[in-house]
Length: 283
Length: 283
Image (cartoon, rainbow over all chains, first blue to last red; front, side):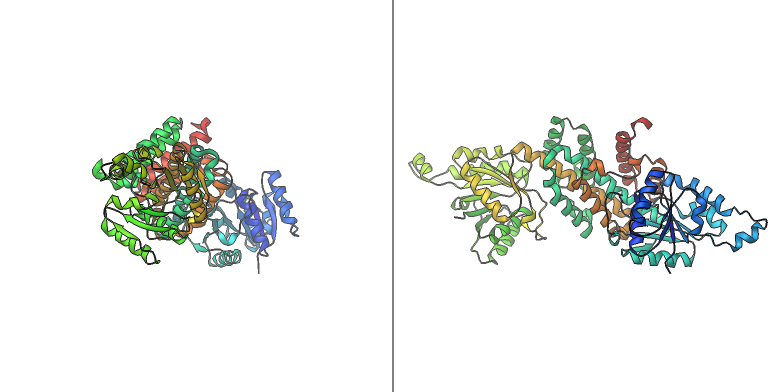
């Protein structure tokens, strides 16, 4: 049976993740977020598909769900977990111990690549099954994405939650793997190189050719494709790889003339790295 | 009428370019290259499609073609042009001036992004129409490529050659534009950022996650797609963009622990650049 799911956070990840799960038949019962505006926007989007999702103003409301998905910024997680643990452990009964045992606490997962499972320990100590469901993709509220194209890295403190996360990932349709917190962090670092830093380089390239930058699309896609198909080392080309100093000087001259100092600096640095690797004898 | 074409050089660019033109009905009459092995391999490949392409050992043989395509490394072009000019201007007649005028010299183009049209001046001085046909794509002998996916940047010293290059590019099927030598060089620099340097970054990422690197394919492709669809600046995400110092420290720790010093250095540098741009107040 598909669990009722509550989301904490209503940003890009919560937006895309909750709608994707809803589409696969999961009931998103509750959205809690400190930012009322984004919370209500997400609740409206979910309700538009026929659910009766509640906008929650108190962490207490999360307890009714079977699974709570924490999708807030990394640095907000520890404090949030403390507060959730305080709320989840609270009971108005005189016989606190008995009530706590009889209550079914929700399982809790976060969606962060860089945050270890360990961050959920205060909730695990209360008896919550804890886990991670990290989408290896930049998600944006403004852009629909097919979750079958999004690899999911999973982690779970209990077999039961592991089985649940696995079947949720299966429903979403993409590749999914169980990853330790340590390996997930490594994948997160690597993704910074292949997405954020690649984006930074493209951002340096565009001003050099201005409105003509779309001409670079085929060669850029081909370079990425080839690197993954073979290995980057085997498919590296260009003046630095060839040790073609004359072209390198011409390029630096262009950047200088255009007054693009950041481009010039990065060009020098990366060219130097590649020359050192492939033409150490000339150095 | 389609011109007889001679190629000088038999490397990756000559290989792909000549076969693509042959496929579109151009007769590749001659291949000249100092490297006999690659020359004969290309001649065999062209003949396999039914042409009677000659392997030329002397620059003299190029004069029979209507168009000579120079596809050698950038730094070999000037010397080659000198030699071609010497051969093309030579005649065994007593009445040298008259013979030179009556001879039809071939048009000559090179395929280099970083080399100005000007490099062909010794041939232009003899009366050759001169031009450039630069494929904005890394070509590899080992990999077939659809030329309709390869933008071509053209330049021509005469209207006649311009019309010819335009119709050749039209036959090959891709986007093509007339570019000045100066603008072509700029596009060439930009391509170093978007292909060679992007490849270098992917080469840094793979060892961090080793055999699991294919998991990075969807997010990498998506980052490139988004950057071109919008602008890199508007689609940049990640810890540096957010100013998330804690995640940045975690990432650096991972790279340190793994002993990946080059990765650590580049991570620091690019993160610093992005932080300076988006969080100058924190610096």
